[in-house]
Image 1: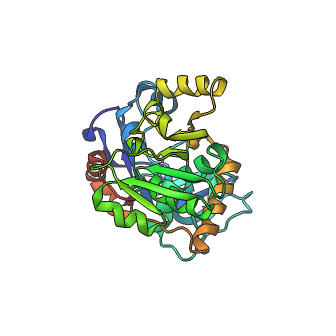
Image 2 (image 1 turned 90 degrees about the horizontal axis):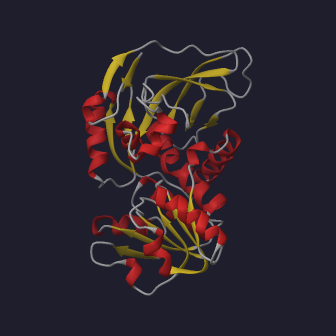
Length: 323
């Protein structure tokens, strides 16, 4: 099969498409024909090995050879002990914390983070729902504890995590403010945000408005910068790992009423991820969550996909189709 291979950390040049052995499922595994996968900021970080902390999960000296974790595709074969799936099922999910989805085929355990895909979605849309949705739903529910009637500001509201977070927060009954560039204001408003702030003209931390939750979905504003915009009992959430946020998590847990929270959602248990996939499927089927796709690339154009993501201006997800 054809797959993206990276044998060292670095720039776009470390990425190559090569022929590698097609995986064979064990008795408790399924073989998935990957029809769509995703390139996002975590894939760029994994390629570069930066920040260094990521290497403790992705390999100290060199990255896992085949990158990628999010997928949508078709079950091609099942092991003899598998009962949850049959050949021909359309599925979506994630291999995280492992990798391997930037390939034509992927083997995963039957009890992994895999679910039958909503029938209303195509493969690209299914991958896009998993891309930002799995992160957003875990942050808002398990870590932000967002409740109906609360207010939330989503920084980076036009990205893959942000577009999902706006819609999920709206469905939870929160009042949503989105922060994005002027080009994406109407997109974010169409997803359910009552207020949309153009960050190029307005600094949301200087408006005087306060929120129960500030979700920095792109890791661009620190807890220190956002603290004054949190209500008493407020929660600051960030998707980006740093030494600073780890120290602030400890400090704010012990002192004060405002919390700083980082979570590595890719390390959540398989059962948690399966529950979240089911919740995302329900939201899609209810018409409360729609995927947002910026661009699609072929596997051969993997470097161009990374180049576009690295530019930092995507809206929603960047999809890669192995076929």
